[in-house]
View 1 (cartoon, rainbow, N blue to C red):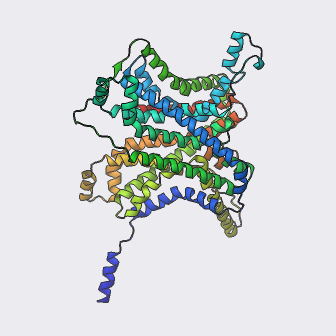
View 2 (view 1 turned 120 degrees about the horizontal axis):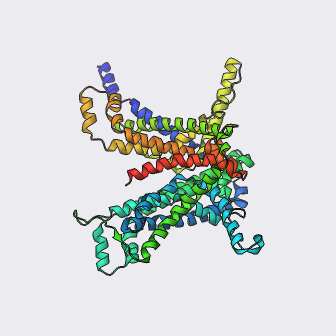
View 3 (view 1 turned 90 degrees about the vertical axis):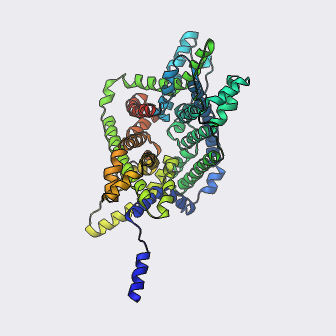
Length: 550
């Protein structure tokens, strides 16, 4: 009798299945660097927080706040106005501009910064032309704005990031009802009034979401603000870590940045949760484009062209002119090594990220327990965290593990293997996986959600196991989405700068770090070929995105 009761108890206790265990392990790996940042910040070996508060931290916070304010405002205005114009009106080049306004996404903000400074500086084309036209001899003969300033940094960041607002706002305007605009027009509302009273309220959740992404990217930016000599929280992490040699202080600033980003995410989600809009009828008329006439049609073309010209045409023209001035730069050994390193770490990280996302999303769907389902949203925190924060969270714990592993191997074999993890590209790959896991997860989750539940159920009824269903049913049907996710993760890995700078081994360069190194030395010619390569690869991803969002 006792044996029977024991067997019943054992049967009632469900052990975690392999999908639950796998999903938990993947979530732990993705979240661990973020948790480690908070742990290191709360248990500092040398607390310099009072010193930071009394010296540089107020300047970091002020510059970051002002940069967010100006960049967010400029990006929101540019993205919303252009989305409204190309969706509601027909004017010269409107069909071209509709997809061309997405192209600045292919230009990393730090590349745009290098191009703008090269174009506007004293020896650049603009000031040279001004001196030739007006007969000025030197800088004392005229006044020109200070280029390396917070204002120009905001312009560069807004020009590179406004497509996030544009993409979401355009989708919201497209999905709106044409009946609401007709009613507003019948009541005497002009074009501006219809935009303010009808368009903006209906698209507010999308605009808020896009602006939140812009603000998060602004907080995490390093290359642009460092080149413009604007001291922000992100540059503070590098200063305390690389110049002050204080890991705890860097972790404390990183934790402050992370809290700020999480607040932005929370505000954005809370704002969207309170807003609800419904169509009044199933027969709602879709939004129709109104042809513009007279001077207004050319004014619309000009307004929509400015963000595209500043965000894409100017950087592409400046970088291309330098890249092809001297063709021998393309055979430079440093460039070829950086290209190979970028392809290796980016491709490996993209592959690992997609495999992990595929396993986790499918594991959550298959898991019979609640915990894996709760862990899935948590893994998106890595994308919200800036690259510098991820770099700190990966480097410090991994260095402890690396030294312990090296000591164990030396004790057992008598050979010193060196640093196997932080001394190689392993740390960079891990940081990329953590940073961009949300992209892969989103691609896989949305693709699996479109598959009818009857298909996997039919496969299970035919004797297929969970692994067989994934291999024979899901993978063939979501192959396109997996490919898109791979491309997007790979492109983001190519452009990632802060985490790569913190984690790269000695004499290891990617395209992003080579651009940064050469531009820091004011050698734009050497920085141009890798910058153009990054832009071309990114351009392919953006064109693919534009094609899928027609």
